[in-house]
Every structure is written in C-alpha cells, then in structure tokens.
Length: 295
Image 1 (cartoon, rainbow, N blue to C red):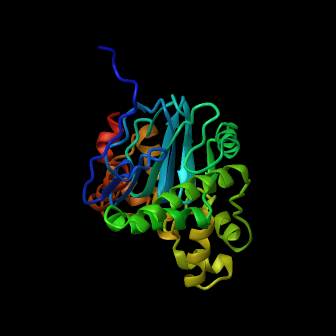
Image 2: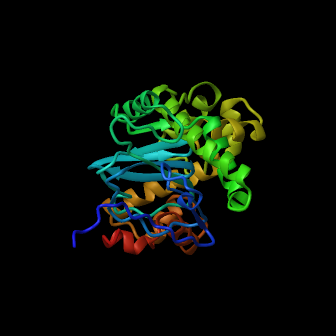
Image 3: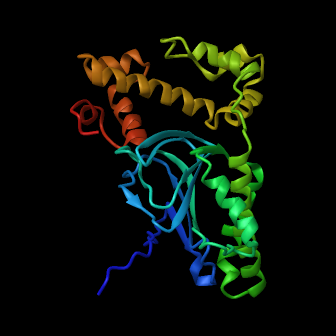
C-alpha cells in the first residue's frame, strides 16, 4: 500500500497553545490556524515539511529565529514569515521564545483552480505574490483583525451556519491581506524620537540604562515613549533592554572565561540566581548549559 503524501498537522492544544482544525467546518483551503502565548521559552520547533501548503508564522510579540530551506530569519513582533510548500523549516535548534505567535496554512491550488471563493485568476495572482521570493513582511492592522475575528467566531461556528460562513470569509480575507503585506514594502522606520533613544543602545555598555533615560533621549514622556517604541520595534522597551543584556551574556558565555556570577554583575542583574532565572525564561536553558554547548 503506497504511503500517503498528505500533510499532517499538529492539532495538540495546551493551556498556552490553541489550534483550530478548520476542516471541521469544511474549510479545506486553510485547514489549520494556531496560536501560542509563552511566558517562558518552550521547546523549539523540530524540522518539518508541508508539501502541499504554504505556511505563515505571524509573530506578534517577542523575538524568534526561524529557518526555512536553509535560510535563517530573525523575527520581531509584527513580522510575518513565509514557508513555501516542500520547504523544510524549524526554529534552527533554538527554543520557541517567550512571546506570542499565530501560524496558518494555505493549500497550494491545483492548476486552473481557485481557493476559497477566488477566481482562478485571483488565485494565480495570490500565489504569484507568495512565490516572489520574499521571506518576511510586516503585518497590517487588517491582518491582525481577521485573525482575532476567526478565533472569536470559532466557539459558535459549528452550531451557527452564519458564524461558520463569516469565519470562512475571514479566512479568505486573511490570505488576501497576507498577499497585500508581501506585495507592499513596509519599512521598519526606527528614526526620530525612538531613533534618538536607539543611539544610546548602540553603545556597548550602559547596562543599567533605564526606560526613563531612553524616554529623555527621545524627548517623550515615559508613557508615550513606551507606545512609540513598541510600535516601531515590535517589542516593549523593558523587554528590549532585557534581551540586549541577554545577547551580551550569550556572547560572554561563548567567548570569555568570566564566571557566571561576574557576567551577571557586569550586566547589572541583582543576583546570579535572578540572572539564571531570566536567562532560562528567554532561552529555555541555564547559563551553564549554554556555556557547555548544550544549546
């Protein structure tokens, strides 16, 4: 008996991870959509391949490394990542980091066939955009709205035909918005007030710099600065400062003989234990394990 070539999807939900099997509603063109919110790093995504489907990962919060077809990408909050049918992809041996993300699929259409209610011509235009070579794009507000509406409609869609029809319509609009995102160059413009603050962060040191210091450099109130900073970088400034120190910690753990206690002190963590706790929350491992090459 020949082996099946149909794609198999992970449908295992947990308290931090919800996966909707849209095929239950007869939506075969976008079979699955998932969402996770991790308060600490989780086990990384092992290498997998979906031969019949495009996949979008939409990172809404945090920073994450993805690798597809040997090409590594670093995503920040607000980024979309595209994997084409047949491409092997993973988190490149890295954990799924603290943050929030959605992922969803589009069945690759057969020649001269449409997806959803799109005409074959519209479907061909959509596929052409997805295959143009871009790996990353910035999500639009409309894209986020479509995703949230799909999750809102899901609990009642099986019992209410109109909710099911609305959900299917949102799935179609979601992929149209994906095409719009990948066909539009949206620059992540970190200039102006936030750019002024980022100049301080380019200096190697100042590990005890505060959000108050950055807001002053940006000539903004702290509240306004936090809003502007997250909008332009995809990460709250407090988390950005932590990640900046942890990246330096990784460098020192790999390249220097400094004791972990000294690294923690240099980076202005109050104790080595607190440093280890934060390091594990974001990387999924202890500093010593990282130094020993278990990453």
